[in-house]
Length: 287
Image (cartoon, rainbow, N blue to C red; front, side, top):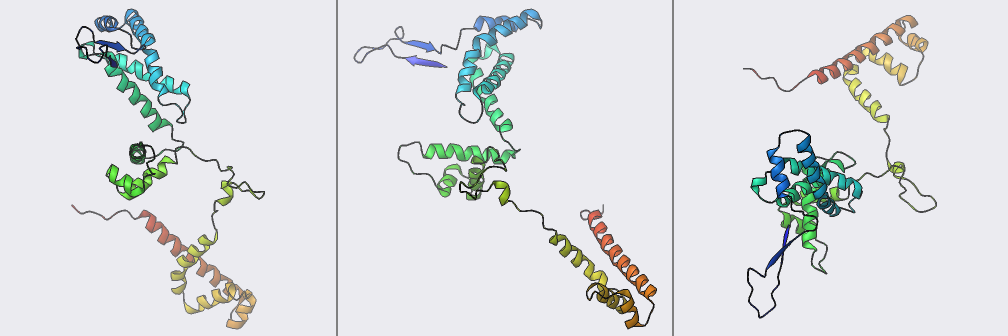
């Protein structure tokens, strides 16, 4: 990156000879090295020139990495990512296309941003949500850059970004969800404090009972009246098989066989219905 440094004072004419341009201290003049590397074939000599270029430009990569400090990643790891971006920039750079710094800065910056996008989420988040998060983050910064600016509302962010308020809401949630929270995290500082795990529900087995009862209703309705009466007396009135036999005037063995046969019939019908639903695909298409 080149920075113009004016050398003239007010009232004196500015001339081309007196104007100077200063490079960053970490932007060395390596045009000759790049030209030499471009002429060399793959081998030890080219690798040596490449390593020299990496060494010379590494301070610039570290400077770029420093822009992203205090975002949840250690500076050393950011420097490693930036160094990887530098290597990619050196390998892909064409000396005939201009200055290396103009090509390397966006390449290294993009590598660091991709690191945050793909590796820094504790949970895998869809790319669309990550993009919404970035748009909302940039919009909040732009709307509050002036001192005294109020915190923008969801509607303000939606107008500024061109997103819907629902999309802005998803982006705002993602801003607060960059990392996970331990289930052991304390949510209360009182003596009777509790953790996040204490607020989570558990599976209720009663739901399974409801599902089984609803599934069995149709099968029970299709049973003969006597079998329905026997099942009702046995399982709802809690009568013994001998009492049922006495009431109906049949043997206890017969009652036992009827109960077993009726239960098996209802169970088979329910399981058959569930298997049929699982095996049913989308609508068939006839060509």
